[in-house]
Image (cartoon, rainbow, N blue to C red; front, side, top):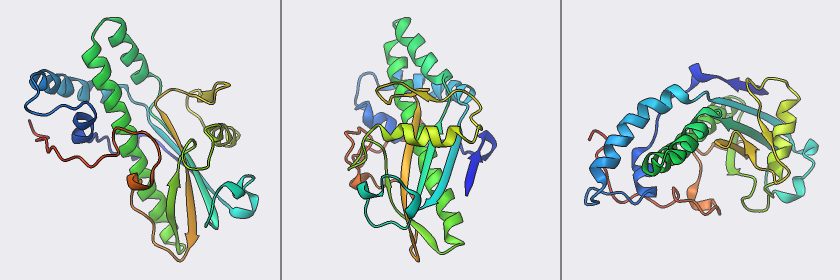
Length: 222
């Protein structure tokens, strides 16, 4: 089961609350109105910059070479999501031009967009698995739990064999992915279970500014 989703399949959405929470921006912040104006501008700009692709595949447990690192699964799903290199280039350009606020804001917006795409992918996979009485019980990213960061490379190499990348997706000797705004993940899959509907932040061990529950509600229509 190999799937490639292109831009036509995706819902471009950014959780503004997550972005502002990560930036510690609230309405009492003196910079709030400046940040809000920049957000509106960058929201439109980013939509034109992204070239997102999803890849995912599912394999039975007996062909997983590192199954001893994971518990309680019968099938393993793995995926790669990227939004292309243009957003990272734009972030770099903002910092080069001393527009630090826009650079930082766009960086967080890209991360929030990737989170959103990741949740869409989990829901998409789950809907397909449900037709076959299977479900996702947990998501694990390389670098989380017991999976070393280097397992980025296993996912990229395996998907690269299918020769479907629309642009170069590579990694360096430190296992850092290029384009930078890319995510890899593993999905633990069992028979006769209902899939989780999104990434389970409470189970994640990453030091992530998006994990905390957002208590400061920001009017997304400002």
